[in-house]
View: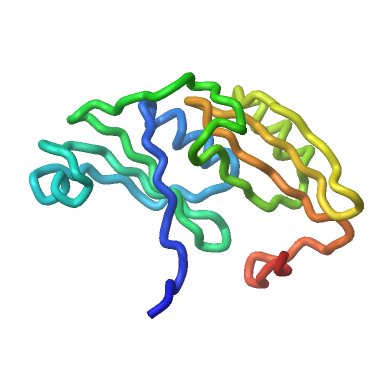
Length: 157
């Protein structure tokens, strides 16, 4: 048996509305939100009495990001909010975009901090931005390619 696909990435957040708005502005679609609680949830994730609000977002190509706001037990923060990219653990999520400058400008208008940008040879233009709660998002614009339409898969890397 092998893995069929990645289902989603979980990001635990304190300000669910701010992080949700950040990802919606980036271009993800808000799918829905619910609250989960009780012993079954707690036993699944290895915690006691759990109550959390979950919001699910989807990228244009169908990948999903789950945002969780824990009400009980409260979320625990390890390290600074603005941890550098080389800190251990999951550090960023990268998205392919077709207008790097436009997306960066839009995200900065929403309060995101530009960490840096560069061009990698003649292949990609890249930028890292830091959003709410220190979440780092990488943006990659492939050079020399026509943008893929919504119903057409993008070229493999």
